[in-house]
Amino acid sequence: MKQKLDRYFLLNRTFLHTLLAIAIPIALQNMISFGVSVMDSVMLGSFGDIAIAAANLGGQPFFILMSFGFGLSSGGTVLIAQYWGKGDLVRIRKVMRISMQIVFAASFIISAVCLCAPQAILRIFTTDEAIIRAGAGYLSLVVFSYIPYSISNNYMMSLRAVEQVKISTVIYAVSFFVNVVLKYAFIFGKFGGSRLEVGGAAVGTVFARCSELLMVL
Image (cartoon, rainbow, N blue to C red):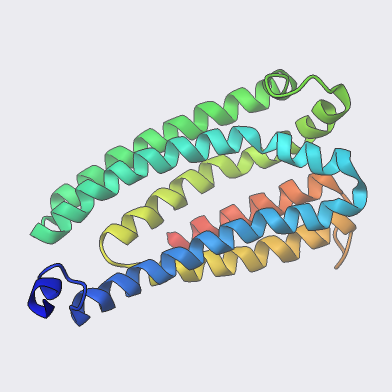
């Protein structure tokens, strides 16, 4: 029985060590990403329901972009992982270049559309004019985080495919700290920052995404 289980890696220490070394950092990254959304709700909660709803509404185009980028980058990482196993760095760079070009083009198009017609985009999701106006202000600022996010996310997912998960975990952790501190500063007007309320959440997100990109590069 033990040999049979070992054949399927259930008792293979090397396999389990490799699995946990990859899985635990990825789980931490997902927890950090979830924590960013929670902090938005906590900080904006003192400004009422419209502020929270505006931030959630203004974030809808980002979820579309994130879903597209995740799907494309996941497909790329499957190929990269296969070529990594073969030691074919030339093809790895080619796959990464193609996926990077596509996610950049997608994020650029979505950013341009959101900048040109933020209220029209948000009317797809709701008819409440007060929330649309507040959400459009948020969207007009947070849209500048789309391109940095798309590039850095594609890089970090590619790093996972070549067994480099600790780097992205550290980057996410630093980005989370930058995000929380700057959002606190710009939402409430602390540390010399301007009191922007809902807009402050967007500004914090932009700086956090840019810091991710700089660290990845």
